[in-house]
Image (cartoon, rainbow, N blue to C red; front, side, top):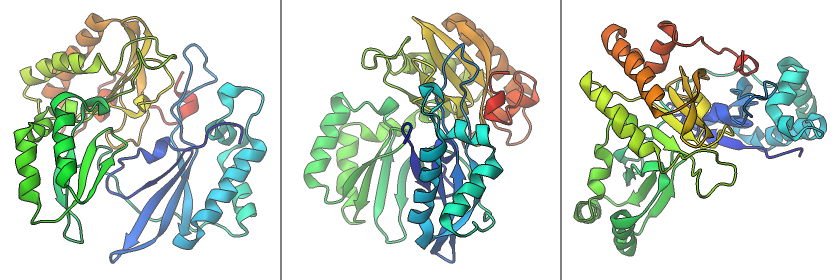
Length: 356
């Protein structure tokens, strides 16, 4: 392969892996409680480089449906096409998204189907409602209990670590890390749940999920000091910035409004910023690009509204947009949808127009 190739599986209605950000995505289609197959999405990717307009984020396109027993064949055929036609000269354009845009989606689909030896069926209907995690307790079809804990930026430290260690000593199920940097205490028998809950309360784990709608839908990359590519803070700074944005939201009665916010220390997109309703990517010490207008369930790219600015300018812009949102939003309108309707940013319909 010319470069890395990301594959993901998602079960609607929760787009918790951001399937449109994957090189190859499988969207599960079920009927009457039975998995029938997958819609196939190709060509997603978040990476880009500042001041390099030939690089851009792209959302995957859904090109059809395949039965369950055809999954491996589809993987093989799609990866063969990228292997044979992906750019091996310019590393910055060595991802499948650029191969698709260079060759054309119809051409790529025809190549995939030629290698499969059959045509993909028409995509089946499906719906996503968010790309976050269902926080708190849920019960599976088998009757087992699962508790998803909000772990800010995925950092398990202090009393959170202490509590999870104690739970691990009695927990007979599993722990799962989610693509949104949260943690699930999974496969809990109903009769064991009270004991788990007592330990959660003892160590304050039950309070993790009491954050604002913005914080519960936030994510940052590690950035400084861990990543050598980082130009600005991310993981260590986003919690403080959210404190300040939450103050603005509270002023307008929007504390519980779920808004996706992502931050990275550079433009590479490791926290999938370019599909967030609010996003910041690092340009230098304490300087960021601010983006608005992404889709709440990961279905739309955002657009830059401020370039290479500090916290004061970021908060001034958000104070203005949030006040306008609180005043003039339509019924059930999401923040990212409003930012486009109100004219703060233009809608990005294709990745190659992201830098226009």
